[in-house]
Length: 336
Image (tube, rainbow, N blue to C red; front, top):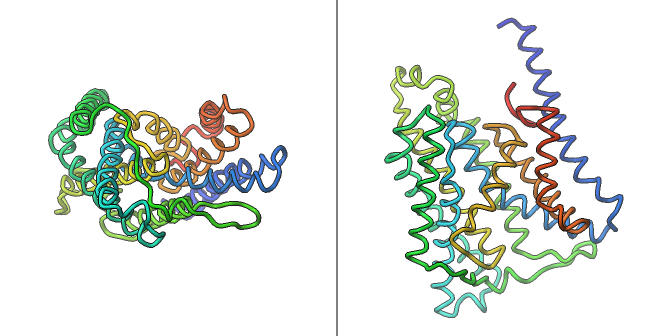
């Protein structure tokens, strides 16, 4: 590859990155035309926090779908199972009388325990799914689609057997329901926690994939699995670990969304899988940065439009996805 080609590719990447951020900033500022400042700021904080919750789901899908090229529709079931796992932990603390009076610091401790439980359960589900099902259909997208739909049905039925078919109310620590005022905007503490966790996961994934040896191996293994095997690395073990990490992120996102909605139900994953797929497509396959920006776009556009034209709240994200794909078929940060 000549220096001229490298420079040309670098310029293309800069233009692509600039275009992605320009779209995000434009959609961020556009609603100011119709909404007063205080309402705009309120909707913006809520939209960013919703975006971070969606990113937790989409980041796992990015690893599995974008990097490993596995069509995993069981992702929604991992999300729902994680939600129930976190709900069980919080409900246990609630039965001891600790949740209703929990301060912000105590609530964060309970949340961390619930997230660790959900992440562990999700990782185990991911390992079992990859070993028993996905390993046999690598490279066969149609079979991946069919078997993961089957896995999703099985997991949802297991949820119904363990926890029942009815919706359950998720106990939320009292400290999470408090808020503070900034520039006349009431901001709930849980929304701030969701933003911090989302940004933290984004930073951790960027570091893992770009600054560590395992990240380089994963990216190389996606490009050419056989060559990586010849270097002595156990690519199968690495792929299983990445699949488990993706499932764990989906489960953590499930617990966070359960607290956000204050309810869980066995079919809750289906709706949010749609959001996650939109985010991955908008951002570009395999791009964590793209999923991060896409999640913010989806969260903000959903909130803004839900306030202005409620009936178009879900449809606007499909419209944004269609427009972006017309301009950039591989997404905002997708590889050319």
